[in-house]
Image 1 (cartoon, rainbow over the protein chains, first blue to last red):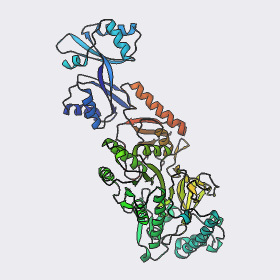
Image 2: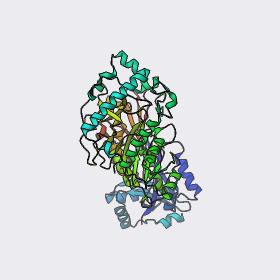
Image 3: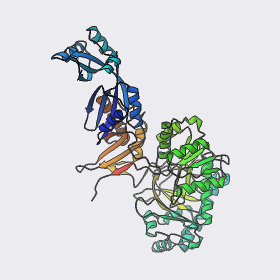
Image 4: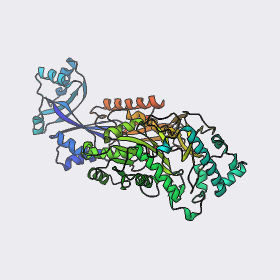
Length: 143
Length: 433
């Protein structure tokens, strides 16, 4: 199951991250997971939110460039080797990871890893074959 | 449609005969009534009678913007001040403005040439012309206005600015022709799209765009997004305002109204007259103006002239689209670059908004060129490497156009200044002291 992620273009300028986050806050959009890719000239803010389309609309109304794309979210045990097991599966299947980020669940001993593989479908197939639980949007929003 | 067939389609023989007669008259008028010209002629030992052929115009001195500034405000008038019934000035962005004074007859000439220009764009009595050029000292607004009055079209004198109102009027009045700068036309398209207005619900058929340089690619973008035929108009305050030349539906150069304005092309360095088709600086002489005759004005605009008859039936010479100005020509590491070249490259890239700004710096004795363009969903991606690839792609498009490496900066949408008049494309931060 693929999960929708929104990515926001941030010009390397004072207050842009704050502005983007404020828009989400004003619209009552709760951020489930977040990562920032930064270069010397610009940044990419990636977010998992319950209603990606709404978030996109609100941000675009405020002149942000937003892209919605799909990523994979998996649950791993919150213990040493948890992430390694996932990466091993992808490595063994020769699937390239573009980026990933992780967050820890509050009430369980689990961590959620958001992964963007070069080919999302192949990534999902490889993980499913190894009985890894791929999270749906619903699962993530319940957290 | 041709407004004045007799003038616009006359044979070359007739035209040259008329031009010579008018040239002799205007040179005499300038010499006898404008102290500036008398002094210049006397110093060079030239007399109005020395003009025996059209080619003899080359004996005359050039008039530059500096000369006009030195005569600020009214020193170039050739008639008593009470005969001047209107004045306009240039924007004065590069110093003191230059003044243009018009007699009743001069305004009639202006109305006539602008009437021809609007007719070339397909305007007739039934058209509603939304004139988004600024009304005021700037010649754009009133120049177009007088043209609409000449041909009996309906003018909507909305002037520049207030884009939401422009769009409302455009919808409610079913405007058929708009007149503005090409960059404002693109901005209008942007706002129309943002407001969700379908161009099919508008009645636009043509646009008369001028007062700044633009490219063929920009024409295509405007035509696609506004659903009209985009035509180029040329003019300058010092000569009359808009209406010196206008593009016809063939879109292969702008017809200069040669029975009023005599064009030459010179090499800006050697000041020698160049032949047909050769690119150089446009030099204009007013043949008919009474209030302020100007001889051999150096426009600083770079173009070439095409003399063969146009498919539209007009015989008046065509000037090419202006490709640069001798003064906004940038010299980057010794290479000549015009902003229009960068614009041309940018417009080849799908999904890129043709709003841009060029920033020139010299951090360590070496010129750096930064081109800022606005990010858009088609250029953006969740992956850094894709965004970097897009930047490289833009760089390579510009490189193939100008032969120089530039740095591309992506900026947020609508963060580059939109102008309702002339767009500021270049910021030169180099210190030449």
